[in-house]
Amino acid sequence: MTAAGNWRRPCERSIDAALTEYDDAPLAPFHLRVGIASTGGVFADGFGLGIIGISLNLAAPQLHLNAIWLGLLGGASLAGLFVGALLTGPVADRFGRRAIFASNMPIVAALSALQFMVDDGVQLLLLRLAIGFLLGTDYVTSKTLLIEFVPRRYRGRILGLLSVAWAGGYACAYAVGFLMNALGPGSWRWMLLASAAPCLLIAPLRLTIPESPLWLANHGHAERAARVVHTRIGRHIRAPVIAPVTAVRPGRWRQLFSPRWRVRTSVACIFFACQVVPYFAVGTFVTQVMSALHLKGGFVGGLIYNFSLFAGAIAGVLIVDRISRRSFLIGSFVAAAIAMLILSAASNLAVGVMIVLFAIFAGVISAASNLVYVYLPELFPTDLRASGIGLAVAASRFGSAASTFVLPVIVAMYGARTALGACVAVLAVGAAVCYRWAPETRHLSLEALDRGEVLEQRPGPLLPSGKTS
Image 1 (cartoon, rainbow, N blue to C red):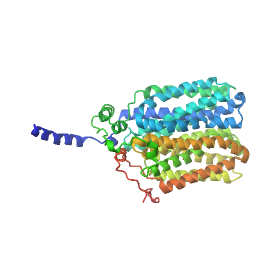
Image 2: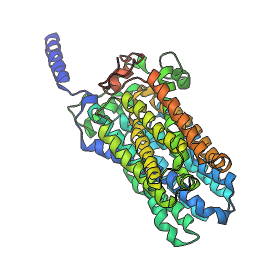
Image 3: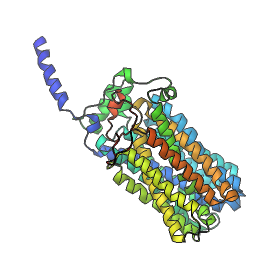
């Protein structure tokens, strides 16, 4: 008996050694299914947020909306996102990602359809808040679930597709609004109704996605984790097994600001907020900003701006795995700030130059938004990941909701150049914080991070190669 046992143990060890680590698994069809399920939801998110900017201009006369109401409605979804993301993170870390991931899109579709029947600003405001809340749940679970399935080698490119999907949804919303504008005074209702379509299309696929194996392993469900890995990815892949002592259970927000994680938490919140504040402030009211700068053809300029967002997102996917995350992050803040600085400080610019500068800003900031989907989840271990993402999303949406509310007021009172100057200041803060504290995560193993093997290191100055000292 003992001899047999001794005979089996070396064989078991040799078989175990032949298995491929979970983080190093080859790309499987299942990974693509998870990618489509996640990107489809993010596309719906971008469409739902993008359609409000153009539809509000048409709805304003019929719903008797003044500048204050326009600001409230423009920022309502972002305010809902703040609450949804903040509350979802700890829930997803404690109870799992799948239930929220599978259920939020059908509910968003129903709420989007109800927008068709609104009679006043209050009804539309309540619906936009509710839609924003559900989108906040998706911002957390889509990033978290996808990164916990995707192999390390493909992580940047596949998670970067979430940025392409979001920008594609945002730009598509603008194009749909442009086409539906011909439907007459009630066209804004059809625009808002259209935002239900992508939610309905992606909902069935989400029902087929199982729970994250990393989350299962962290919560004592090793057999379920192994079953998911072996049936969906391959029997030659080693299922993640995390020592229970490393899992973080109570007080996740307190843990995020503990000495071990507070630098990464602060970087996540600040970089995300400084990126999306100008993104949404300019993007939501780009037509009005261009008109305030006396740029003729502001609507066409806005169309170019939004398609620059889409092109930038694609460019970001192509480069996110080719340079360090840290170099990409800091460089994008600097480049976007320079474009905004010229727009805000230089007078009498030619129309073509102004459109090019807006397009550069849109392309750069959209390319860097890949890091929201790639870099942000890499900052936290599995049992804090959804909470960390949720807190960062909440911080960013608090800033973007406030800026979306304030920007049309600033433009009306002080002019568009002052508003753009404020965006420059926000981008400069983001560059400075990331240069000082942002860690490099390009080759990170999520399992090593969960086991506590990745130590916090203060990044040094950037070297010419894009590495840190």
